[in-house]
Length: 139
Image 1 (cartoon, rainbow, N blue to C red):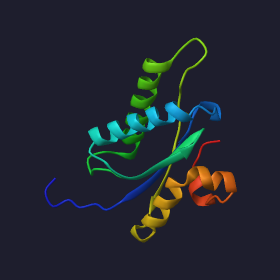
Image 2 (tube, rainbow, N blue to C red; image 1 turned 90 degrees about the horizontal axis):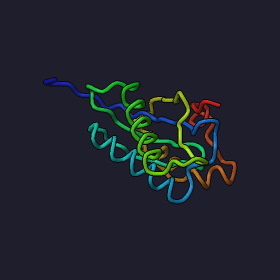
Image 3 (cartoon, one colour; image 1 turned 30 degrees about the vertical axis):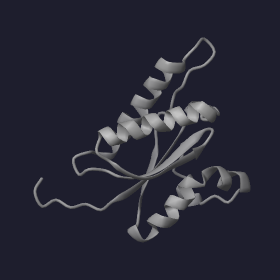
């Protein structure tokens, strides 16, 4: 699209199915690598990725040709499918929740939101959560 310009920052958050604590150690690193690979394939600019054992947050700018729903479906679907292909057993399977939360972030708040996302484990351990960013999670 010639002469199309968009500067929109989307904060996404979604959980593992039933909030099961699966995103730990090697599984977390593998899941994050899969998410990175897919958003790169989609041509997205991701400013931050972080989370805890049962959910992830990310701040992303999407290409103007990619819808919010298509982005979420693609990164969640590819990552859960690949995790199960690589790791599933009779006692372990990976699945994201059915939905997701997304809100827009003002350019003037990007740095603060990036810091919040990158320090998710500490914020949750200390109970210092930003309700506006956490409320997007499906419970």
